[in-house]
Image 1: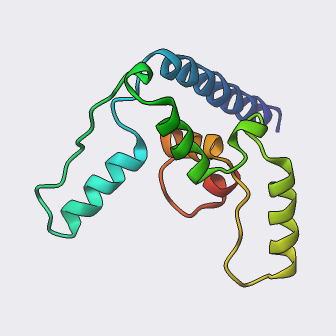
Image 2: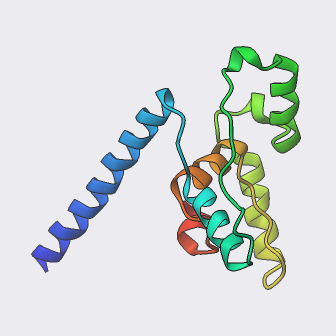
Length: 133
């Protein structure tokens, strides 16, 4: 039993340290690809679209209008400038709604920051880990 605890602790520690390292790297270097991008390419190939690929061109923030950045952020997360990555009020409302409407389409409470983190670090599967991650 002690060996299992040590292995579990080591795995949790590894993933925590690995996650911190990825965040620090992505603070300075744009990700080349994300799990979501790779999954979309694979989906395209399985659907018979062999021309599918990853086409992106990074732009420096100073090349983008501040009004455009604000508009895009607010279109996805209306309270983006009023929270620090977690909108606790929306999360609480989503939990209450989902308890009340069991079995129906669930409501999410994640912010654009949380969605971005999921898209960069997790595959786009509908699993418990992705929903809670």
